[in-house]
Every structure is written in structure tokens, then in C-alpha cells.
Image (tube, rainbow, N blue to C red; front, side, top):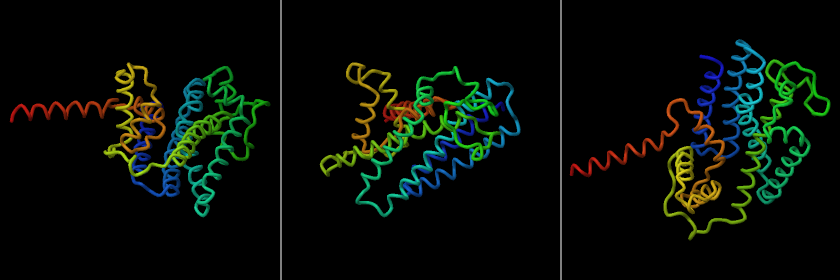
Length: 277
């Protein structure tokens, strides 16, 4: 098994564990703790593999620290931040909105503080990759970084942690904004959905993208965000980060459209049974 296969396999295993945690309906603070512990275990396995196997060339090293490691580490940072936020809210229900608004401010300040690198991240630039994603290189003077004391230079580069934090903070920002918007528009009894989605969120995202690309809403002009919000309201479920979940679907090794294939098989089986009656 080469490095890419190993990393993809471990990521799939980690995401399966995370979905189980999310489906377990832990209290939010417990979910943050268990999620962080779970991701930390996979990060340790990833680190052990990299330190033992190394890289074949600079290009593979850059790819790992620019794309692969941040993808794992973003979940670790996200769960850690969720735990800290929930911990601060435990005895502060009356000022819950104020606290969450402050967290949004912290996130936005972080993006502004690291504006240059965040723009590099958002625009998918590559001109500075040899400085940002190779280990033990001279630091770039105009990019702020944590003290060397707090990083393991064998498993971190100037840009790898920053990219992971950008991913985590973008997700956290969406989660907080979604909660605040929901809190501003509480669901009344008459607004409750007639049916409740009890399947996995990843299955709903698979269906969502299929409906989007099929162009069956608004003559194919409906935006993905609008479709997601409509399905959430219709089925009484919070999907979360649909883009991240879709990326996980794309990375599946054994069949990407597992849920859609299952629907087709079950419908055909039902039809065959009906014909035999």
C-alpha cells in the first residue's frame, strides 16, 4: 500500500468513526471531547507512518503537508474548538448568543490577521509551496508562525497547521452562523416537518447532489445551498457542511453512489415482487 492509499484508507476509517459519534447524539460538549480523541488517534497513526516511511520526493512531501495532513488536522482543531466553546457556554445560557457572536469575531480576526496566507489558501496558489510545505526550510519573514518550541518539525511545516486551521475555522464559522440563524427563527409547532430523516447525513448529501446535477428544480437553476436548506426544512435535519461531506463521497474507494445504487436495487426488487403478486 503506497502513501496515498494509506492516507485515503485512514481518512475513510476516521470519517466513519466521526459519523458514528455524530449519530450517537452525545451532548455537544461530549461530542467535542470524543471527536477530538478519535481524530487524535488517527493523527498519531498518520505521524508514525510518515516518520517511518518518509517521502519519495519534494512534490509528495508538499502534497502531504498542503492537502492530506490539513484534511485530518482540521477535524482535530474543529472538535477542540467545539469543546472549548461548549465548555464556556455550560453556565452561560442567558448570554449564549453573545458568546457565539464573540466566537465569530475571533474567527474573522484570525482570517484578517493571516490575510495573505488565507488568500493564498482560498485562491489555491502554489508559488510559495516550497517554503510553506517542506520541512526545515527558512521561515518567510512576512508570514507569522508559532514559536518553533511548540511544533514538531518532523511532522509540521510553516503552512500545514495554518491550512488546517483555515479549514476548521471555515466550518466552525458556518456552524455558528447556522445556529444563530436558527435561534433567530425558532421552529414553531406548526412548522415541524411531517416526516423526519432518519438515515445517515451522507446518504442525504448523495441524494442532494444527484437532484442538483439532474436539474429537476427551477429548470436546473436551483443553487446547491437553496436545495440543502429546503431538504433540511422538509426532513427536519441539519445536514452540516455539504461540501465537505461530498468530498468524502468522492474519495470513496468502493463505489461512490452507494445510497443511490441501494435505492435503485430496492425499487427494482419492490417492482418485481409487485409483479409476482
